[in-house]
Each structure stands twice: as structure tokens, then as C-alpha cells.
Length: 505
Image 1 (cartoon, helix red, strand yellow):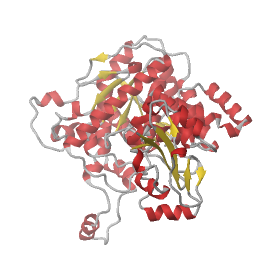
Image 2 (cartoon, helix red, strand yellow):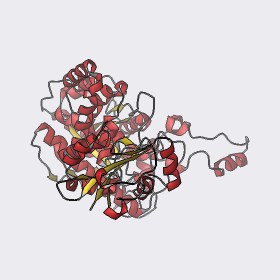
Image 3 (cartoon, rainbow, N blue to C red):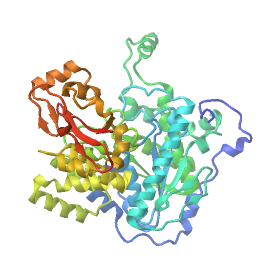
């Protein structure tokens, strides 16, 4: 992958990177495609998926004709996370209502990183890491929208075509990479087509910039330099990000007649920058040539955010967040959060969510809503087999009382691959039978040292097959449960959270 925009280079033909006359206004003039009968904005509002509309006329805009809408994905990590599901699911709702979604992977802008919602600059990604991230995220996006399509039972056309590098995936969603059009734009072209229309006063006032500007140490320019060199403030690279995102909107407006951008609530400034650039570039007299819709950030009732920056991301990649952890994250949702998650993070109709919540309130101890939530999202992201496996493991790992019967029914071969998740630990029989439990839990990796295991034992924190162990003793043959695949298993716990199924061969 070649370096993006920041490198001065010669374009083969200067005119090839200039922006031509707006084709979107022409397309609007003869469009006769009937619009959807239902009100998409009302559905999104019923799911609490609308934080801000740049114009109230967006509702009419969507009802008048099928529209093209896009949302960007930042490839700053090798995987998407649960927080990314809000815009992706919203794109799926747009598709279901007959609109044309585009998901844009920031193969070019990802090398800079969006400063929105951050107090420090992102670490720069090397070329190979960025390329690997883009590849992995595109695979996840394809899988996600194909799963959505299967859920709705629709048959949408898929394939290659359109813009260079464009791929159509499930639900007719187009997947694009902004590297395809930014790679050939020279700095002079960018300044002439985008920079010319940007106003510093507006750029400096955006929250993503204003919150990062460090007051100078003194009123002199020297003081400003000292302040910048101390690590505060914002680099020009980050400062220019809003212009690059605005350029994406302009490019898609020109080439695909895209009139709507959606993103998180922290993206409002970048989205309005794109709308303003479109208006200024084409010299349009109409008030609203394009629109923005922002979504609330995913938070728990405690106010805790979920994402990379918060350091508590739940990843879509099973290698980063194992199936069981993914499933349990939603199964552990509080009663205060579960209805919000069902509406925003699932494809269940709002009426169905209401029925689930009514049943849940009648029998809260059964945690009906949490089970529906965990089943639905895990199947949508990881597949049905992951749901079944996570259910079986949950019944064993988090059961109350004797678990011998549940262990005996466990298809250990089917979950043996979960050893990498830290759920199943394969050991030889001689590593367990006859050895003190404190040594076994140390070998199994539940504690860092045998001393820690002994302290847990003294405080009643060690369990064997869900039975509390009060004093040191060895693991006997009678403690093992035979399984159909051959060999035997037992369940060990250390403290509140560390638990393993030991699979002895």
C-alpha cells in the first residue's frame, strides 16, 4: 500500500484528480423510483438510534425516494467491536427500507486516526498493520451483512462492480475503501478543491479540535512552541482529518449520489464539515444538499462506554473475544440496560422486544431478556454453533450446586477447541490425580502461584465440581466424571471469576 495523501507526488494527469460537476443534482432531477411507505426515522427513534439530525427534512428526503447513505469504519484495530454495531445495524435498517447503504473502510484516513472523542493522538500504524487491519475488517463486514441477509431471508444481488475496489455484500450493501480515491490526489489538488473551501474559524471551533488545543505557556510564539513540544495540543495531521472525511462525503456525493452520512454522536462536526464542503464546492443554492444522522454512543446505565479508547472493547473477532466471553457479556447485562440493548443491538422488531420485556418483568429471575439478547447477537455475529456451545459451557461453568450430570453430558470434543479461550484445559491424568488441589489449580493456570492458591483455600475460595474445598486435599479418581469421547473431566474454580474444565486424557 502506497503512502496516502500527505506525500507530495505527481499525478499522471492533473485533471484526473479534479472534481467534476455535481452529478447528484442531475440524478435527483429525473429519479422516479417510488420511496418506501414506512417511516425509517420513526423506527430508528423507537430503537433509540437517533442522537441528532442535521435537518428535520431528512424524514421527507427518505420518504420521497430511495437514497444512498454511508458510514465509515476506522481500521485502527484488526477487528471491529460491539460499539461498531450501532452504525452497521442502522445501515441494515436503511437497506431493509429500500435505501442503498455504503460502508466505507478508511484505508487512507486510518493511517491518521480520527481525533474525535480522544484526548491524545493515536499511535501511527505502519503500512503492513494498516493493510492487515483493512483486510480483516472487510472480512468481518462481509460476514456481518451476509448474516443479516440470512436473518431477513432476503435475496439481494452481490458481486464486484462500480467504484474501483467496490464489493457488494449482503443486503445489497456496498463496501468501499477511501484509499481508492485518495491515493492519487496530490497535495496541490487537495488544497485547491478542499482546502479552498475550508474556514479555519469553523474548523477550530469543532469539539474534536477545541477540546485538544493547549493554551500556550506564555503569550509569545515561543511559549506556544514550548507548549506544543510538551506533548499537548493537536498535530496538523489530526487537524486535517475532518477535511479528509469531508472529502469522502463529497466524493461519494459526486460518484454515487450519496446524500446521507451517519456516524456516532462524536462525528457530528466531521459530518457537518462534509455537508458544508458539498454546498460550497457545487455553489448550490439549496439549503440542504446533504444530510447527517448521528447515533448515540453505546454506554451502560452506569455511563461506562464500550470501545477501543475506553479499553474495554468486546471484539467481534473470536480470537480477541472468545465466543463464551462474547455470549456472557450480553448474558450479564443488567435489567437497566437489557431493553436498550435489545432495541439497538438486535434486529428484533420493537413489538417483539416489548413482548420479551413483559415476560422478563413477570419472571425477572429467569433473565429471559438477557438470554434472548445473548442468543440473538451471538448468532448474528458468531453463528448458531457458537450460541449452542456457549450455552452448554455456561450451564457447566456458572451452574449452582453439583455439576456432575452437566459435565457428563458435555460434548467435550466439540468444545475442545475452546482450550485457546482458557475454558478447557487439557492435561495428562498424572498431572491431576493424586496431586493437591492447590497445585492443580496452579498448573491449570487459574492462579499465578501456589502461594496464592493456598491463600484462596484458607479463605474458602477453591472449588472442585462446585463444591467448596475447606482444607488441602488431593484430587481423586472419584472426583473425575467420565465423558463419552473417552477420558474424564472435572471443574475447578479459584476465586470469583477463574474457572476451568480440566480435560484429562
